Image (tube, rainbow, N blue to C red):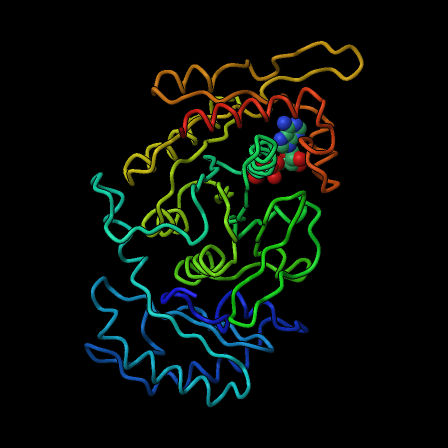
Length: 373
Ligand code: ADP
């Protein structure tokens, strides 16, 4: 286990506790009162400090974060330890995690300048990381992530997939994954195996209907755990299904981890492309290469006649990518079977490997490999 890895006694694993009722508001109020006795640097107490996150209490764990200004992490160490003790005294057998983070305050720094932030590292056992992003939700980013991952595998690569869409995780459903991931004795997650892919998602750790209520620092620390405290074994490519848009999770990921490239998924409508351009702009500012654009729901093939309809005016993303000098990786048609197979947890690339859709995804995967090489 690497020096930076912690045991699973914190944020993500809090969700793995046997869940009867997620939020224990009484206990979290009690902890908050106790934090009023914890002094913070510069005067004042932790309970009334604006950087204190929500206090999450589950039957097995207590977790909260303290967001501080960059460079103030060490100064907040004693307050963190005191807060930990106070929460432990109230929480009894629950595992307590209190993290100090400066990520949020760092964020604006990276929306300017093009310098590669120092301190980026690779992930143990992972040769290449490819993010799949989109300007807005609902364009088929997760569907594309899963099928590109499977198509890369069909090219002979060992592939993993991480669901970083913490607020709308859909990878478990798309891959037909059930149950929570196992945790090794040393606290490391054992990813699920689905169609040969190693997969991890916060979605597998939630009870149905439960929403992730973490704010910025908690969410980024949750993602870091999923990424760095999962036993990826030895894989060639890790596909990360990013949340739509540009936010804290993207910034934290790109700031801490070497991401070899991001694929942008867009639909042909102008409005989707405008959003996608914002994502591309952000990636440029953070020195993360955009390795290509995929146009999803590009055209419609009538199931009865086989006739092609360019319902949104196809080719918009291809032309726009060319204008920006970004490789165009391919177009995926709008086909009912993609939705039906995806909903049933059996992605088109494996459900209908001889179909035109599977071939379209494989073509994208081959171009992606060529671009990366
Ligand atoms: P996102 O990750 O961008 O929010 P999803 O991958 O969850 O989007 O896709 C949104 C919906 O669109 C899902 O119901 C999915 O099955 C469907 N979908 C995605 N791509 C296609 C496609 N090419 N043809 C038909 N349906 C699609």
